[in-house]
Image 1 (cartoon, rainbow, N blue to C red):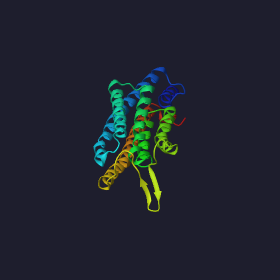
Image 2 (image 1 turned 180 degrees about the vertical axis):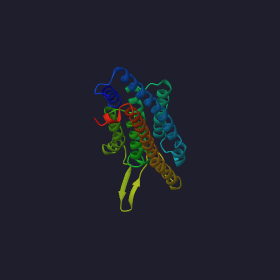
Image 3 (image 1 turned 120 degrees about the vertical axis):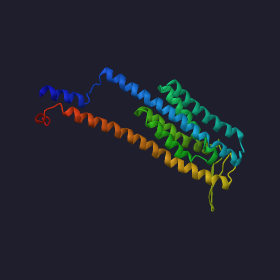
Image 4 (image 1 turned 90 degrees about the vertical axis):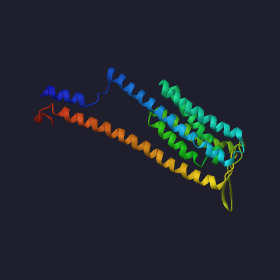
Length: 237
């Protein structure tokens, strides 16, 4: 009974020091998670490119800014694709992917300013990367995401950019330096994108919760069967 009790404890309780073999397996599992994250990033960033024709339809008044937004989206999607296909998920590759995607989000300020759509895009992007990074990397992801909002606003404060918003007795006016804003096109666009920004993080959080639930269930089932090794009289000892 003592031997069985010891065996059950060793198999169900995590040790303070992870064995080398287990450490290698854990590292491999983490690498696989990051590769899956890169694949999803490539798909997610590619869907962002789908809104480019809609923005062009608004009527581009500054093609230099438009080219900057498009180039940043393409580079971010390409970086994610390369990371996925080559399994290059090192810290540097991840930092590049976070940086490029955050840059693209920050440049979206050219369309509606830094306080419309950009916060939701930045929050969803940060949440996505936070699910696949350690605590230290999450701090960097958070800082970059906040920068996507703050830097464009600071650019208007110091005079590098004209203000994106005007306030008056009639309310708030959005001034886009990149596109015209025809109401007939902008309102449906904002509706579709806003709905997508509600649905996407919900799906991401749900998938994470499902994965955690499956892992917990496997652990509890394994513990149940391992407990059967120990005589019933000794299980409460």
